[in-house]
Length: 176
Ligand code: HEM
Image (tube, rainbow, N blue to C red; front, side, top):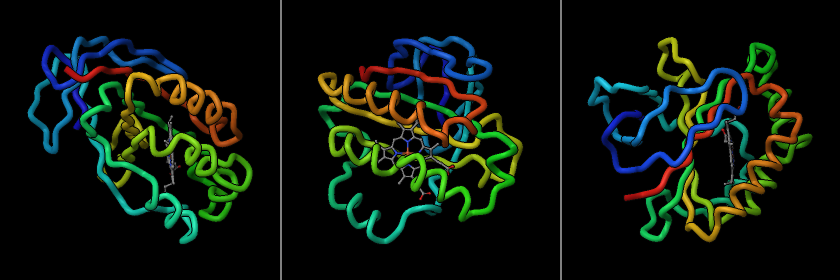
């Protein structure tokens, strides 16, 4: 559960609407395993789920280098909730994989930012309840790696995959 309000482990540096409606402004971001609400600004829920698109070769490469979120030195981060369009969800699994990787190189582009950027993907549709976003993405990195993260965002947002993103809000945070 990612909640915005006056309390939480992370200070919110800025909230930017990339596509669609923004989120209400808040001073701090609270990240928890369970709902502890009510929260004055927002409260968004998602679950870590099974992977859908990775091949075995890609997964092996990823697991060899990726770092878990929450590392000591990773004092900057980004919480980016995303909703994709109806057109995306109407595609078949193989069509989505085709766009995500063969055409947009999401995994290949992402790998370039590893191990400096740590990531955790949460799925909202798996909750079975109506939610404002499909994915809650969560990243952290050391302050000096922020330019690398910015480049990663720029590269992903220029892909065909991102033409299916209808709502995206970027919440940049600092720890402490
Ligand atoms: C840090 C480097 C990154 C790597 C290595 C990476 C890797 C991946 C992988 C392997 C998947 C597919 C998971 C599956 O098989 O289901 C995925 C999905 C996803 N990633 Fe990334 N990613 C990175 C950065 C990002 C960033 C910066 C964003 C957001 C701005 C993002 C947003 C997403 C979303 C929304 C999905 C779900 C796509 C869907 O299921 O339609 N990723 N990522």
